[in-house]
Length: 90
Image (cartoon, rainbow, N blue to C red):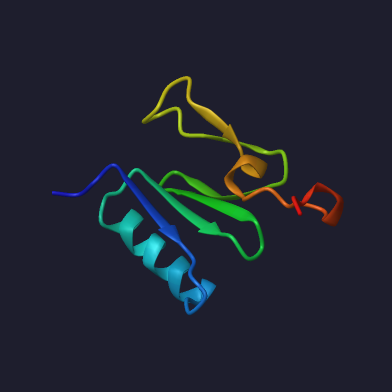
């Protein structure tokens, strides 16, 4: 049984080419949508069997209409907020 969605999140020790290959393999095996999240570069790559890979950044909107109709999130909302020195509590 193959899931409809596969998500990989890059860790400190992961290498992007290895994760890209892994997600492409998921697609070959029948996964409908593969998502590769790279917190270091603040990018999200979307893989589908019937389309080219799409890379999202900044205020781009992630949607997966074939699995989650109506759901969306801004890529910028995936990353932790950055606080300036002035914003910190002393």
